[in-house]
Length: 316
Image (cartoon, rainbow, N blue to C red; front, side, top):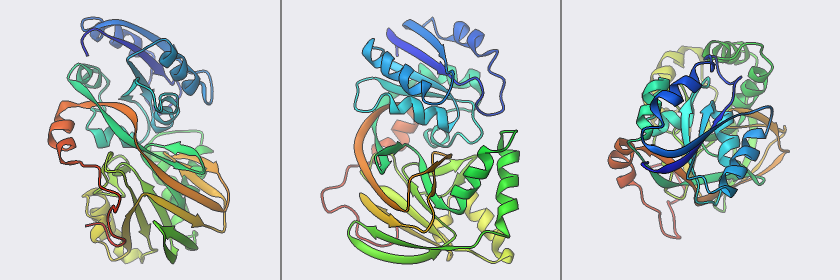
């Protein structure tokens, strides 16, 4: 990190935390170990992507997204296939990718963590050409994302209310998938496509997902009875969802999906991409900054599989 050129991209309206003091935190903690830094504020949708692209052109070493998963997505999309790395200071509602990486949610600690971080290459997933970096999904969680986006208040409380409000009325849908060439038809509450392991707030939808194994994890969740909610909650918060009889886990490099609706979420943000979806993995397409502890403890266990990949079936 020493001697690097940094740019900070702040989304002033993401999450629930006040961003007014962040500039003072940066001024206090950053100048001691970087050669140069700039701070930018987003002014609307896609502005973070434009700012990140401009930073690449100016030979910035690291662009740090300050906000939630949507801000991270937009910033990373301006850095794809470049030498500039993405850093994250989590200040959103869920902070899924940053939690996977072990980045502290406390702003001061996250800023201090930057100087003890290193860069590695992570995979990026796309659906119909649109990138996502953590988790995308169709079905129930996509409906929740669309409803949450309409709410006046952000934060986990509002998100949880949306989850509860839809639970009793949402009906499972039938999906047709082609997972690395193998066809599957299933009736499911939702289907998630995971690069990282969790939605955010330590809710682990794909507990064995890795960021640079060249694969995405597909989690198919069946509707379960209300009596199973306590066990399900335990499993999803304790990295044991793959043990649930209501879930099926697969890995793949490429997936085709046919659905009846058009809704989808990409890193928690709502989109409509059509009834036919094409998911694929771009191995090592993004440089990302992560704490050394994450790289030492987890990254050393990652490997890029050969052309055969994992067999079609449950995640081993």
